[in-house]
Length: 257
Image 1: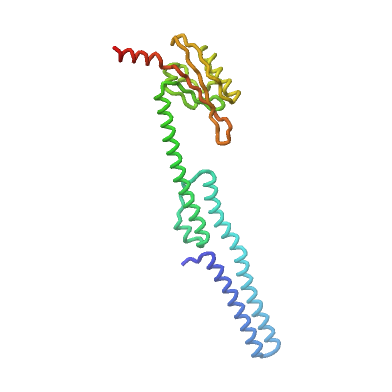
Image 2: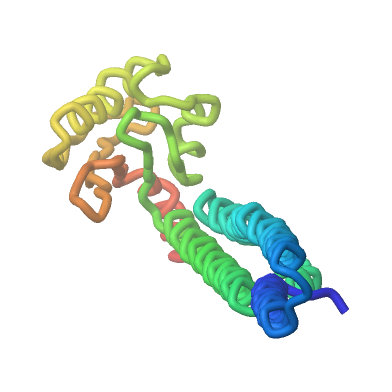
């Protein structure tokens, strides 16, 4: 059966203790049964040298073995902590091998770290599922509404554009940044300018309307800022009202007829 760290140290210390007792016993025996002074002196010296040599070997082994074992044990623990700190929660650890190669104290720490990583992974998956669920709800609401919505980050990169906007202004379909991309004059001089003022000032803009000749009506722009928990702006939303008015009037006329 393989001895673990604590048992090995205890065994070696016990051997040192036994050697000390044997050495003392031999010396006392020689003192009580002297043959000659010089022979007794020689036997005592040899006994002391042999005992010290064996004990020195064991002590040197302990001195070098303890740091090596602790380095191995803590390196395994550090690797698990490093993975968790880097966001790697799905840790594949063979606990059976650790149980047979580490003392119960070190194995308990590794076992707790593995349990912690599993708990974090479970929480992370639940969090992701909840975020996806909430995202789908918000997207569904934005697609069901009659208004148009443009959502972008603080640098102007588009995060989301609902169908009402792309159905009305097809130019948004192949664009990625509201500040850097080029748009037709009616978008460039109204929506883009409104977004530039919104992002540069980092404050909500007053509603503004502009006329779209092809639609023969005014579109009303409104805005809101997206902030992180510290209150720092991280993006913005622009809404477009009055996009589907003609469609709704045609549906009303069909119902009346």
